[in-house]
Length: 120
Image (tube, rainbow, N blue to C red; front, side, top):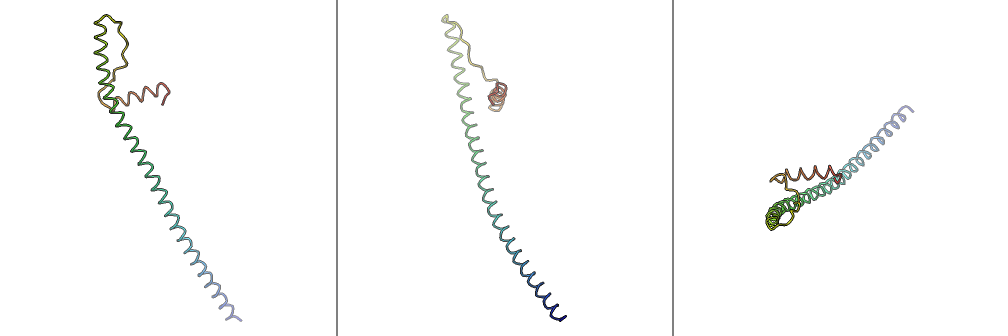
């Protein structure tokens, strides 16, 4: 009877070992699948951020071109205003002159102005 009890316990332990091995395999597989899915989500989000940054870069390049255009037009308008004044016209107010020649300073100035106006 004692031998059968020991043998029965050994069978139970062996079955527990088999069950634990199966559980471990399942966990390893699920961990692998979750890691793959998270990797895909990560890649999608990274690509989304890269597209956002690319769009920001494009907007900044466009903004830089507009700053150059603004400076050119402001200079032309200033000359035209001076000629109108020489011809006796009432001097009109010019739009503001940009406070700097650097794109960085101008962007900082505009961002501050927009923030102060509550538009940003």
